[in-house]
Length: 248
Image (cartoon, rainbow, N blue to C red; front, side, top):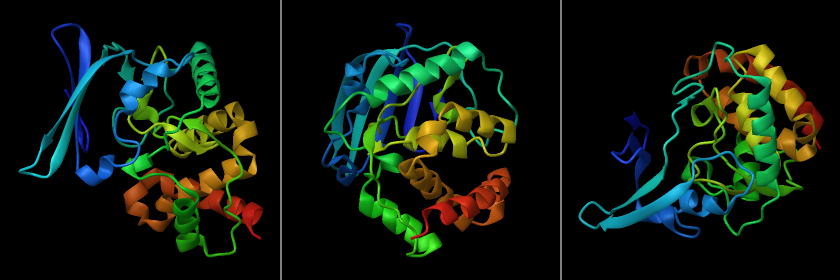
C-alpha cells in the first residue's frame, strides 16, 4: 500500500493497481479530477494504461471520492518519499524514455489546465508567487505553454524501466515546468541536477523555463532551511542567477 497526502494506492487481486483519492468539492470544479482517465489519450508516453474508474460523493463529510484502476507497474519509484540524496541507478535507456515521453506529451493539446498541488497554474499564480518572495522587478510573464505532467518528481518516476506515474494533475502549463520540477528535486545531488539541466537545456534556458525554475525555488528559499534541508542552499544559489536574468 502506498499512502500519500490525499490518496491510497494498492495492488488488486487482478494484477492491476487501484488508486483511491479524496478531495473537497471545490477542488474538482472546472476541469474536474479525471486526469488519470483522460491521460489515456496520450500517445508515446511511458505511463500505466488506464482501465476504469468510479467516483462518488460523501455529503455527510462534504467530500468527493474517486478510484482509478490502471495497469500494475512492478518497478518501484526512484525515491518513494523525501528528498533524493543518492544518485539513482538509472540507465541511458531510462533517460531516453523520459526524453521521448516528455517530448510526446508536449505535442498534445488539451483544454485541461495543469493543477500542481491541486491548484490551477495561471499567470496570476506564477506572478504572485514570484513577487511575494523576490519583489515586483522580475519579468515573470510566461511566453510558451504546453502539455505537462505537472508533478514530475522522483516519487512519480520508476526504475529500472522509466514509467511516469500519477496523472491526476496533468494539463497545459508553462513550457519547462516538468524539467524544472525534476531539476529542483535533484538539487541535493549536484551531478544529477546538472544531468537534468543538460537533458533539458533548451527548455530550462528559455525565458519561460527560467521562470518555472524560479517559481519552484520560491517555496524552498522562502521556507526555513530546516524544512527543505539539502535543497535549500543550492536553490538559494540558483535563485541569484535566475533573479539577475529575469530582472526588468
